[in-house]
Structure formats: C-alpha cells, structure tokens
Image (cartoon, rainbow, N blue to C red; front, side, top):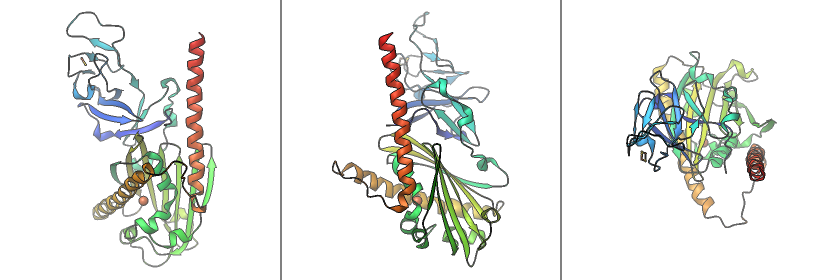
Length: 346
Ligand code: FES
Ligand SMILES: [Fe+2]
C-alpha cells in the first residue's frame, strides 16, 4: 500500500513541543514530542504494557510517561520505569522513528531505520529563506494520497476547479513536457502571452501579457515542488515573478492523507497585505481541492471492479508517477518477503 523507506512530513516544527502530539502515518500511530533541549522525538504511539496511546500521557524530563499505569519510556523507546514493580520486562519498549527537522518541517522515516539517510530529505530551503515570503497551510484530505499526486501532476484542473483564483482556460489548451530522472517526475507547461492568474495579478501588480509557466517536480512518493510564475514575453523564467509551492503529502491510511502546504514567493516579500490576501486566497484553492478529492475518493470506492481511469495526453506525468510508485512499493515488499524467508530458513 505505501512506500515506507522514505521521509514523510510528520508535522510543522511549531506544532511539536513538550506536550505529546499524535500523528498517524501509513497507518502507524506516532507520538511526537521534544526533549528538554528541543530535539524532536517520534515513538510508536502504543504503550508496550496494554497499548494505551502514549500521546495521552505526559513528558517528564526527556521521557514520556504513559497516562494509564505509568510505564515511562526514554527518547530511545526503552522503558525506564514500571511504577508497580522494580524490574522492567525485556519486551517493555516501543519503536523509535528517525526524524529530521529542516526548514520548518519535521520529517519521519517510516521504514527500515538502518536505511534512513537525512541527506535524502528533499530541498525546501525557500520556506526559510529571507529572499522569499511564505504562506503555509496544513489540511487533512479525506482521500488517498494517490489522488493528491494525480491532482498536482495534472494542473488542467485549475481551469475548471479554480476558475476564480489560479485557473484560466489557457491552461488546458497548452500541452506538457514530461521528464523522469530516477524517482523524480517533472511535468512542465509553458503558456506564452497570457494574463497573470487572478489571485496573483494584484499582488504582482501584473497587467498585460506574460509568459506563464508551471513545472511540477514530484519526488515520489512524498513531496511535490511546483516551480511556477510569470515572466516577460520571451524572457527567461528566472527573471520573472517566481513561486515555489511545496506540497508535502503524507498518507494517513487508505482513504485519508495530510497535505502540508507552503507557498513561497520572491515578490512583494515585505508586503504584509499581500501575504494576508494570498493566505486567504490559497485557503480557498486548497478547500476547492479538498472537496473535489473527497468527492473523487467516494467515486473511487463505488467504482465497479474492472472499471479504470481513462488517461489522456495531459496525464503523461500521472502515468509515469504511478508506475514509479508501484515499482517502489513492489521492491520494498519483495525485500521484506526475502528477509522473512531468510529468517524462516535460519
Ligand atoms: S497501558 Fe501504558 S502503562 Fe499500562
Ligand atoms: Fe488544485
């Protein structure tokens, strides 16, 4: 169902403090908290004693105490105290998940801890760069993560779903270029000599015609970086008004996902009113997406077996990303099967 050997956004940095926070990622419940020196910790949110959620307990020093019978676990997940007796059973421990905190996000590694490499956390530096101004949102989507991936890889939906904010007919009228490098799929669309999208035109003070572009870079399976903007007709993209939309997509379960969203811009950076207007406008865009994808999820669940999507040329990136996602999942499942077969032989 899920790629586990990857970094998923688990929370915004400012959501995690001393008070335990619960998150479910790929059907695995986690409790997040910070130690006294501010280091974030993620443990399985299930006490080894009788499965009470540790997130309903409290932190004491660098440890977390279960709120049911007081088993206490260190930041490594090992039980250090059982109040009702002096000995600690060997199996009294919970799983610890590797974390990386970077640019305002806390990323969790859900698979084999030995394979976790912090260098694999994607680049999101725009969120923390004074040359860029950032608006953020996080929204639970009542749909499977795959529908959000498809949504971001086929932006022709903007022409219909987001007519008043970022959409315009000219989007679906222009074709795409799809490239694949390793497990990164890029879908690029150039729209020459068009007006700026309604939501940005005022903020950019952009009147007249421009070359508009958007390139979705999907780091399968956890992050889409949308490089977007407008520039003068025939001018290089780098000279234009640039936007980086960071979309951290984290599966909760088969029918629910977390959508961590950051919109960074290199124009009107110190304009507080522009930031507020964009915050409100982008909230509308996300709500439109959330409602559409929830309806689509319901449609998917009622679809008869044997009935499949009808993909078109604009779905070139969707098709490539689905293939990569499926390969990554199969590869992980084969490795797990090999390990258990080797274990059974030993
Ligand atoms: S369930 Fe946690 S101490 Fe009993
Ligand atoms: Fe959308």
